Figure (cartoon, one colour):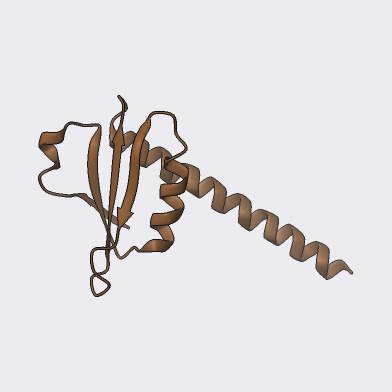
Length: 100
């Protein structure tokens, strides 16, 4: 996954950033947005897919005090944990089903 900052954000401070995810879409955007919006220190989190023909997603984070990059990293780690738990539960249930 390739991530960069949207040009022009340097002037808005560390708490307001838009990140550009290459080769990503609504699948990652919506899941990550839902997690990050639950954090107490986040004022706004949202994403857009600028055009269907372009394979990129713009992901905006605005926080009270915490740098937006820290929030993004925490969100990605938390999403990984959720995905790992989902896979573990699914595999456990498949094994249980196959026993019957």
